[in-house]
Length: 122
Picture 1 (cartoon, rainbow, N blue to C red):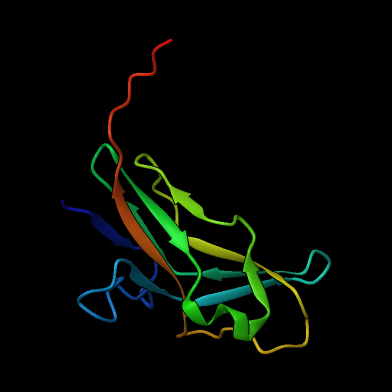
Picture 2 (cartoon, rainbow, N blue to C red):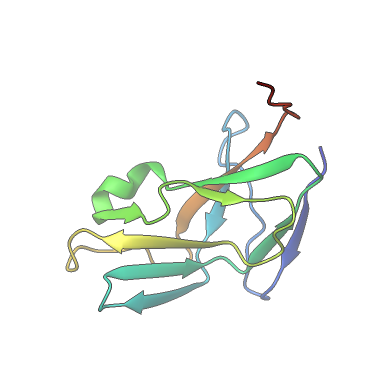
């Protein structure tokens, strides 16, 4: 399966696996925005993906998310085949005074999944 990666920013880091046996590819923060009114932190990756038809990307938080008192506001993000926008991770703050991820940190991972063609019948 071939997935095209586009760097939207010179600082963007191409997604890669930390270990050969990992399921997902790590995504690194290159920018951070905070919305203090809504307690949301948005991490920019500077990466867009172009996937073959029938493939989606599922976005998951890192394993150490519990340390940062955050949760992914979309529960699990979905990058559809036709999406060509920047991948961002929006986290809701559980506790606003706990340390957060910073630029250069892995802020999530993308898992590429082939979607079967389904005929729903009654």
